Length: 356
Ligand code: MRU
Image (cartoon, rainbow, N blue to C red; front, side, top):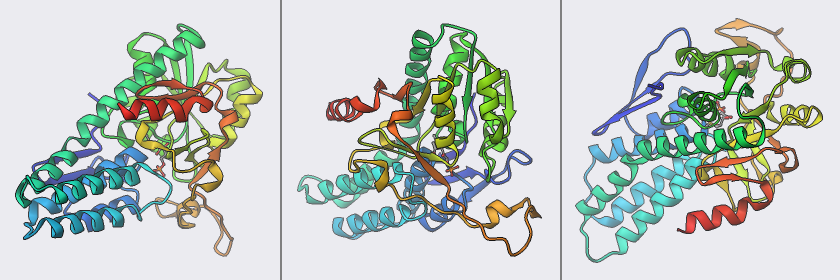
């Protein structure tokens, strides 16, 4: 069974504090939207899908605690809280997608003459409370589409696959996107070895992905970020699969800082480069990666580790949390729950699939 980053039942929400991993596995309670915003901002929960699920469930916690006099009051509450949650981290788009869907539902229910305020309350809760199960099902579909595509287009077995950052069970409601592809490759007997980067500065690769791979007993090695080119040159790497925080209409993709340089090196070495992401990460409102806002994180996340200083006081720092990989470097494809698409066909395929 894969790790549970998010535990929710009947209005009680606990998240695994990812800042403590891998040393300690401790859950912390999220008592409502304020707490939800704070655990997302501090990165105690992180990864684009997990941010959306945690944010929405923190709203569900508040909805369980409150009653509303009018449907209009309830609509305003949902719209305001969801808007606030989207401000915690600006690059990951899944929570913006969730905000749009929940606000639309609340608005429709508010205008409907056939339901009262308590039915509206119940419908909104139901919509939020199915998000965990939906996300796991989507991730399994991504894993299976990706594994099939790689086996058919790269090699049927003996695959060596590299991932970056953590796009695993910890970054989602379970199973993972990029790590989900690795899990499906293992299930199909195709994966010989997994590699994960350390992912400086915040080490999501060494702290979290390596933890997941060890927990699942997947044959795997950790590399420092600076070893990726050497890995591709000498270790016969089959493919790279990474997650995404936002994929825009032309296929340009924002993901953890360092993804862009991996994609450049992959192109040079003819290693297929894949993005694995649910349709909720695809933002067709933006045309190109130029329009994506890149979050910058505090310098202290670069200059210290577990309170130990790694750099001299007084040094300036630049700490962008994400970069944008141009669509032209995504040579393997974009793996979604609906199938694997080239960047050029993404817009039409996603529009068609989500219209059904
Ligand atoms: O800063 P983080 O740890 O939230 O960044 C996470 C990533 O970049 C992941 O690759 C992305 O969110 C996809 S998670 C399925």
